[in-house]
Length: 274
Image (cartoon, rainbow, N blue to C red):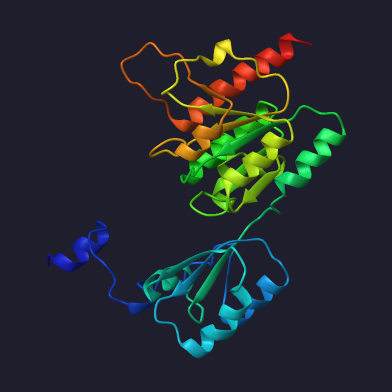
């Protein structure tokens, strides 16, 4: 006798109603997160590199009070989010707080600058103004490492930071090239400028081609946000604004592609001079 249910199961069209077959194992916690009030507090006290901290909206004030005290005077990127977002990141007891740690130690650009100049070097620093896409950031870091860039400078807020995904996209380059964080890009660039660096902005709004500019000497090259390019304040303080010559109808490039082109032009000049 024909049995519709058995036929479906033999052909793979049926399903087993046994509950345990539908139970999903909890997703493993990402390797770059820590959670819980006490754990995050201890991480901050021990100066663990932290990219950002997610805090549950409406968190119990008594629980949050000690964390708030430890955060006073710190420049961590804080986000207040619904509890559902925290629950998606871990199935464990997060107590309303999750922190994303950095897999690398961020450097201080002023210290590196002083070191390079005391050694008589002519370094190249790549400055990323609010690059938010992690894959763009990782790809740019890989290009920078290949093109001989000495360090990458990023803002501590409003920017993609070094994460496991960024390192993967960079093919490990973020483990080899120093990455520096700063609370204010403008202040750090002013320090570099006063130390003898030329500040160069890459923007499609300029009529000066990268081919017609000399990249010799200590140089900081700025690339801007995927959305609106380089901030006005940074453009204003730049020693030069350069564009990449193009022949097509589209007037702008992906920031990762633009990075590769301007860094290649600099490397070509440096190699030709040797």
